[in-house]
Image 1 (tube, rainbow, N blue to C red):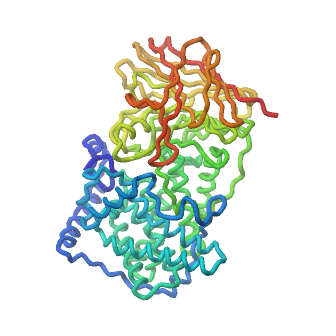
Image 2: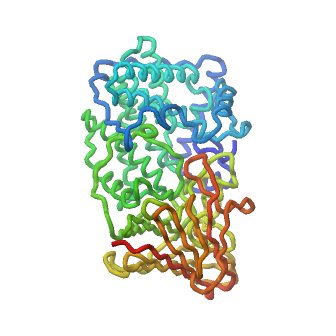
Image 3: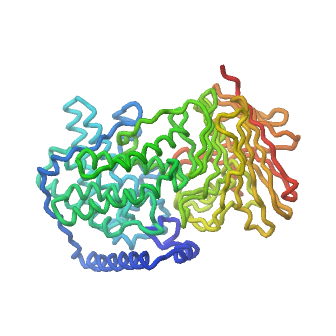
Length: 604
């Protein structure tokens, strides 16, 4: 199976396989062999038609006594809107339905997505059943009794239909334990909130919950696979374990889920509150998963989550430093995943919002400057991502973004898709898709497949003035091009003055003659007019001048296909052309430099 698909449900390509082998411990080898043997044994039973796993009994009065965690609408509540039904993340619903129909009778390891040219992430989204969660949560928001009944019936019918159509370990929706983990809270909420269940319907949901918990517990993403998948699985075990807490099996799930959440807290969330995976979207996802589980555990006195809560405060403050008018730059991968459902979240922590000023997050590697006029400037001087595979990190060292008055002017172009579009996957993760310098058209790290890098770069802050100083200066470097036959070090110096101007100088140390290309990607809808020595960017009331002193020609490109350049993805599965300013020089490293001046409007 192609490496375009997530590594916990497919064989990696040869390079990824070698990377894994290099980091393989005896414990991980045993874990993977045990998983493989279990899967092979269950496959034999499935093909013989003898795969049967009845659920353990549930003490329903005890379960009904448990309080549900808070689930709240994000922004203004709209019952009938974009999230009122299963999403396919811009995938073709007909194609995805046909794929499911062709594969639902296959044992999950026999499913070959390559044969159908399907993006599994898009196929898996409806099977997370978060549209069912949406309907159940919506029923709690309305005071219209008739509407509540309709929503509950819709939720029940869709949930039971999915369970009947997807028997245990058959079809594509058991390929990833993460996906199974995300369904467990839905089952738990359904047993609590759907009061119109017959005994047979309740048993069907209970059996599915037990099967999911049993499977997740024995197929956890551990060792080199630790990451947000692990958190999804741990949260699933918490809800599944609480559901079956009167059994030895259920108590093992609950204890293991809590253990993993505590263990991964410092691994996933760095000391400054930032993400080890170098993705803002996945950081929000992980944080919400923790909030959902910790609210549930604390409310029902199943575990003291004080240490978790303190760490989450740091993570929330980190994310809010990047927010501007409710959105953040799309730094790193994003698959539009939600802990609860699109449009819904657990109760989030309140932290003081920073109105202006400069913050440097040294561990995660970002400097955020909040300017007058509701502006946010970011400089990325962080690592590639979470080793050893750096799955969701992008080759974006020293990249910058700029948002002003809610308008994204200089952007990170996003993710687009994980599967089925190899050239686009490489482009959106690569250096040329970010606001930094690419040398000899080579990425800052070596591409090793859709979810892996090798030869990761190192970054370092070389100089930095105090955050309250005017002007503020910071200089950082990365060594991603040290691997070239004539090695090069890239340095970026940024000077911020009087709340309205940035001066950026890119310089290089090394030997040999190279091609250097500086890119600035503009948000969709940004009007770019050429002016002397630069360009004027406009969107709504936001106006910025970006100047290139020296008189060199800076080209504007848009929607190029060979090579790919000038593309933007506002959401998973969506793609559109965008303008990109391209400034190219050729010469010896020590003789080449770029200077950029960004002028913001004056605000009183």
